[in-house]
Length: 72
Image (cartoon, rainbow, N blue to C red; front, side, top):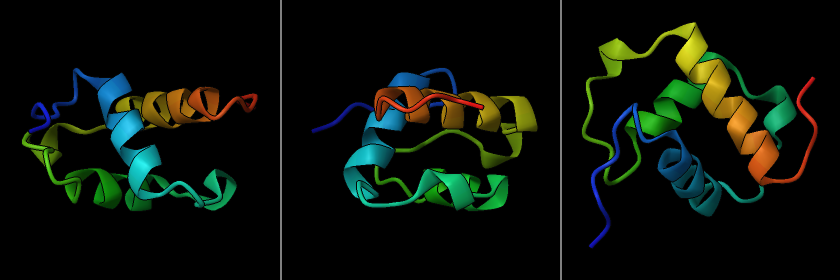
């Protein structure tokens, strides 16, 4: 069983996102879409209301880096 995912575990969130959405083009991904995807992760247990633009931008940046792409 996987560990629960919280906003303060961004790397684990990114790994879970990349596993579920491996073929997704990150360039067109909006913050709203990213938030929806995160809260739908099977082991995400944190409060969605705690998310803000900085958290979502940091997660997207980390996801880009995990995929080996440069963040603009």
